[in-house]
Amino acid sequence: MAIWAGDADAPNAIVGGGPRAPPEPGRGGARLAIIGFGGAGRELARLLALKSDEMDRLGVKVVAVADSRGAAICPRGFTGYELLKLAETPRSQVSSGPCGRPGAGVDEVYDETAPTIHVEVTPSDYETGEPGLSHAFKALRSGASFVTANKAPLALRFWDIVSEAASRGLYLGYSATVMAGTPLVSLLRGLRGCELRSFEGILNATTNYVLTVMQEKLVPLEEALEEAKAVGVAEPDPSLDLEGWDAAAKLVIVANTLGYKLTLGDVRRRPLNVSLGDVVSAMRRGRVVKYVARFTPGGAAEVAPVEVEQGSFLAQARGTENAVTIDVGFNVVKLAGRGGGVDATAHALLADIIEAVRGWVP
Ligand code: HSE
Image (cartoon, rainbow, N blue to C red; front, side):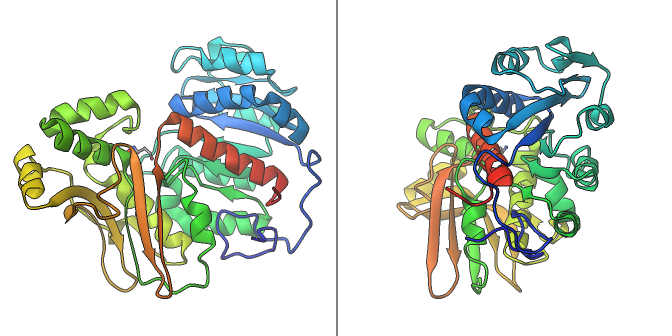
């Protein structure tokens, strides 16, 4: 898949600037700023530390890490050991670790380190999009590629962000926003030019985990939710999962990646409000309740609890697994795998970072 060609309709790729050769391995180099330092940001810091030999070969350094109260800023690049120490600092206290700067924010990070890749791991806010939305434009207008696990900026302003990246020839990576850890976004890129008939899938790990626990342990939703929170896939505000915001945002990102201008407001959203009785009743009838996102071009876009046949592809996704079926007429493509969790998200971010630096070379 050639992703270096200038193609404004090629989200999640290096866009704009015309064809150019990928850098020699190790010649790319990048200064990373990790903005947001909750579970996924910390896991990424650990992963980069563990892969420090490979990062050295690629010339990738982490020059700043920021949370809501301050930053750690290190223009020479943190050592692997320092990254591990940062990952151990208490929540919202990254500025108490190595090179800590209490009160410093994204502006100081940019002024002092001029990052070339901005990694956005702040929480998603679907009303304002902030802080991720401002960070996306700050990054791209400052000449930094934008790699995000935060869904809100793309769910709210997908094409504005794609255009901003395209006009500047910068990489926009969002593999971590949908089915993190399972390369759905790459798969969607491989379907460009196909005619979509329908997309349906389980895109939210928390609701799937809740439903799986209800089915297997016969406990009510509230009890199953406590288990889901302990697994670490729920949003900081789990109502975003239960009310369908997370699945709807992912459906918007999927549809736009396939070239459709779907907005969050276009997605009919029904919350997960099923009782244990509903779940058991479905099982007695050979069916399973799943929280499913569906999009048909020119038709419906919705996220809702629905019953599917036991043994069907979607029914087989258990726990934090996601599963999607994409009908493009001549082919029905299916993909299943982990969808979220800090380790899966960190790996998806790493894949984008490597692609931003090296392009699509193995
Ligand atoms: N809260 C999200 C989910 C995390 O449950 O799927 C992964 O995007």
